[in-house]
Image (cartoon, rainbow, N blue to C red; front, side, top):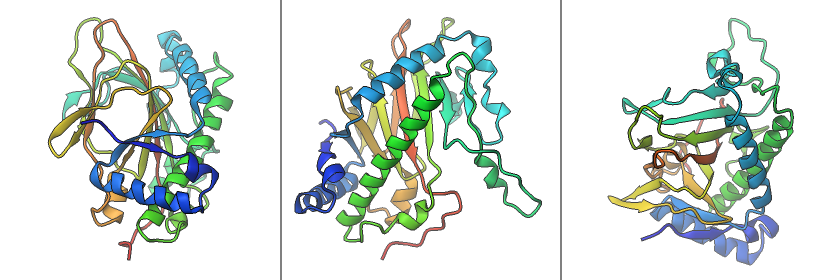
Amino acid sequence: MSLPIFDISTLRLAPYSPQARQQAERLREICHAQGFCYLTGHGLEEKAEAVFTMMKQFFALPRADRLALDINNSPAFRGYTVLGDERTKGARDWRDQMDFSLDMPAPHLGPQDPDWLKLRGPNQWPDALPAMKPLINAWLADMYEIGKTVLSALSMGLGLEADYFDPYFTPRGDDRLKLIRYRVPEDGGTEQGVGWHHDTGFLTFIVQDEIGGLQVDIDGQIIDAVPMKGAMIMNLGEMLQVATGGYLRATPHRVKSPPPGRERLSIAYFFNPKLEARFAPIP
């Protein structure tokens, strides 16, 4: 068994055509049955390669340069997380990563403002890589459009208006991008790149390199999400599962560490509603 392949090109180029509505039905079926698929026809292959090149430059920076961007410096939780600093179900995840979101000034909060507004604010950028900021901001913008396209198609596939979920993303959702490097430390580690988990938001889009290691658990069957050239991986999060009364599924998955001496790179984009969104069950 392997993950299904879904071509998004018709939805991107002719979103209201009869063919797009047929595609929306198929996407609904995939997201109900598996909750995971390969996504082709997105048109971002060359841009993804540019992001991978930038990632290699970033992770090759001196450790001190990366630590200067420590995520703990940021009230909005943007920045660098050191290798093994995160855990899933109590076990260490052998990866380091850089987190970004929509780049904006830090909010000026009063005593009556909710604490979650601190999650909006500026990204941290490495001084040694000035080209990183425009590249990453452009990737965030491109992926946001992909997320909107997929969500509109899912809405149509569910028998809703294409813009049904738009109020939860207006004026803009609170998305997140993680540039992730999986590796086992020289002094030893486990095979847990990241442990079994569900994503928490609406939609996740992953561009992975050629190393592999992503595994999906569909009804107890473990499926290797083998890298496919030109394809992204798309999966659903728990928030969309809840919003659809469990009809669309958030599927558990993990990443196994690459072999010793190897690294695995992953561009993970999380398409999430705005922080203040409140959901009612769909009709």
